[in-house]
Length: 117
Length: 116
Image 1 (cartoon, rainbow over the protein chains, first blue to last red):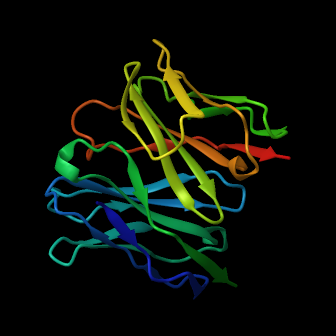
Image 2: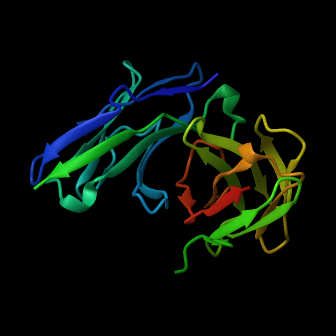
């Protein structure tokens, strides 16, 4: 079975500094996709970044980058130059695995990020 | 380009009633999946549809059902509501073709259900 582990229930960062949110995953299948989502207090789930297991380079989207270390089964999110609006819950998720027939997203428990002015 | 639209955004029901939630995916997306989010259980997968066919189903009782129409819009229904069904129900859409591990998924704003 697939599993996502986010070991940081909460994180604090100063505005304009970079922060890394940890994510490790467990799957025996070589084919999978990794996702990060942001969920503000309003509840909407905002897509941030995606990394496929066969992608050679780490994904980047603006201030977001995904530090993908396949051998360690790690997919950490790096947010550069934090802004007050980045304060939210962040979820790591995985899709695929299990023989390549699994279409569901498996989520971690999330990390609550607070950006201090 | 319009995003994923979920209706209604908020609703209150009483135990024993049923509820139907609607999701309109991004134009051109053919896959729709549903998730339940509660403080205790986190985000849990309900089911996924592609071209009107259910491809995956999560571990929820038969009271939870869904369907997808030919225009890719999807509905989910919960019958005989229980207090524990109070949750945020999120719908996600994706292109859906190819393998399940490729492509991005985009979520709607969710339908917040309260069962009294």
